[in-house]
Image (cartoon, rainbow, N blue to C red; front, side):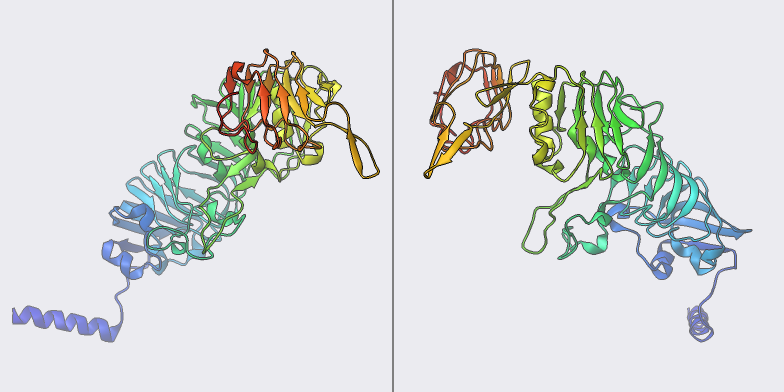
Length: 472
């Protein structure tokens, strides 16, 4: 026992006096203890808390860094290899994850080979790279914050469905909430994965919930085996081409294919998450817009422009997107015109309420050919003399014609004189009154024949005396 203790003491003295033992010039091993000792950044706890680092070997020859073994590839190789000398990284089967910052900012890297055994790619682990292409296998299910941010990779092949940590762990407190000042309105840096890329190719089924991470891609191709979605003219639709799901953010002109019936309004938005405002920080903007978009041309086959019900968004979230809708003359369904009216800029609201689109005006009501009351402007002011205002028609009663079958969302908002309207007479032909239809008519006290309407939105009379009351 004494002899063993003496040998151990001599060994420790050698290390203290002579310095640290350095591995051979072309090989370095990383086990659990060494990761804590030589790794400048800890393995991201949000992704790899239960991961076993395993034992990884790095060999370097002729500009090629080869990673072998089992477990997580880390930055340990930088202890013995000059990062600027690395031109190619080959990761062999058996490696299960790439740790945070592992291969980021390798200035001269031209190629990296990632095997199918890899399931997780850490924070900024492939950031700042400039190369022709990279293939991330479909087996990767988790990406860390800003995994491939920065640089320019011309072609990126990667999964179409995955989980992603949207925050730098250093910006979170112990309970996982952002620290003070961590979130700022419109701060896109917190939500990125991709670098700038000319062509994004998905090698597994596309999930629209991850589309926010693809906004830097100019062109997108889906997996040929994707059962739900398909690309037509660089726009992502449901496989049958009847619903437009996603528009690449760099698109300037969208021409919706003939036969498309539904356009998801959030196809033009890239939702990147939100936290509730608190006294410490606030995030006012939750979306990245198709800010280069100039025109959207749609065919007569379109029946609705609506929101994805699974997302907490509204028409107002498109208020900063300044593009023009292009419609041909002819019969347009009232609900399509309503949707466009709600999305487009305030000054363009009335562009689509004209005879060109078979919209008739009757007593300041704009009614589509299929019986949707799109908008009511109130009684037009004739003149103003001697301090008195005169309005066209009755002062407090509006009789809706029999041709109307449906009253649209916000149809009575922004009337010229909302104080005047106190009574509405509905025809028996009306089948539906949409949410917030009469919002703005805040003096409305009576609606005749309301009890005969089959469907009335919960908030149809919001901000009126009738709100919350039983049908009259």
